[in-house]
Image 1: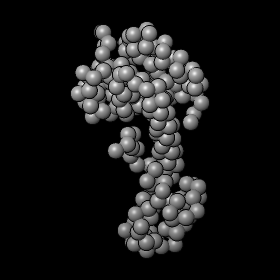
Image 2 (image 1 turned 180 degrees about the vertical axis):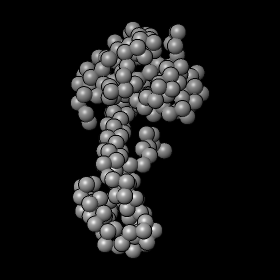
Image 3 (image 1 turned 180 degrees about the horizontal axis):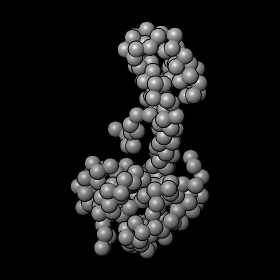
Image 4 (image 1 turned 60 degrees about the vertical axis):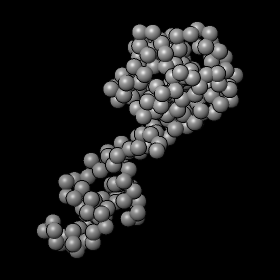
Length: 208
């Protein structure tokens, strides 16, 4: 797990904030406290890695309102909602909107810690997937137009002869382009080349 990850606690109840801060401190988890959704929204940037521990019912801006706003901003920070018994339908709706989890009050401290750790591990994996995705895109972008044509055809499993015929070039020229493509992408096998194409495609941000 990334040591720089932060648990962002957003709750208008000072007692709950302090209690959660004490709990996280006992297991050496980094945290930041916010007494309102508005305060968190003003301070948060997507560059901050971690998870959001969010109360549903708060004045001015509810936890659900904050989730909607974060979604509009393109944020993918994992959200764990803290919910009372009467808030279960809202928590379920929040899950449909992309929340990672919710936990009911009163909760066992270990249950909460387990869910926080799961969220932090998921976030670390998501960021790694994002970095891998962007790296693959950058490598493909560095190819010439002809090399990209050959790359995508090879990655689809087409033979050199068929590629050459369709592109109007010799099979030998295809082989030269293919060699250059593999060199620029830093791959040695066809399987690795196909992997680069897959990594350049869409990222799954949430499980399921």
